[in-house]
Image: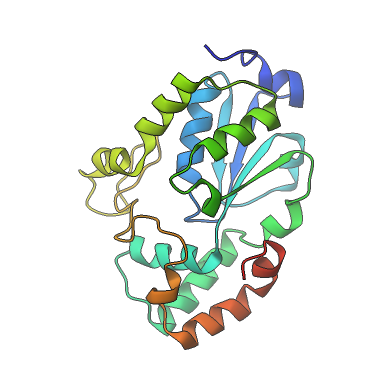
Length: 214
């Protein structure tokens, strides 16, 4: 059993809700499900748009190299990385508030989880959650969560969904949740053309600089 979780949201942050905010395609659904199972007494609100009212709640953020996120988003729709499609994805990411991570990254109510650090290494997530919420996540619970939401398990759970429109309402896992690149890091280098990479790096320069993506 986890210790001190019964009233954790209410005790520390005054309200029994945790916000899971992220730009798309950053491992957010994995973290959402970990939070959902750890804090079953709390409401876990998953969102791609940050609102000022969230400052009153604990916020767990996932972020990723934006070029990998764009590449993953194109694949979830079964499309090809044309220049037109890239521009469409940029517009979609703008609407879902990708720039908000720059505004909130240093706030005391915010925990930032870097995709490249927790890709196939979930202990990074558990360790930071323990510190942020002042809790203890035992080894057996870590193993159960890791086994339940690793890529093979997610593929098994979503195999009956034909495309991204199909999803499980509880876990929020979609069809095509795992791309053919299996969530690898920095695969944008072989996915986009050099000109497309240069264009995207210019678009997301502030994010790349702020989070030390060289």
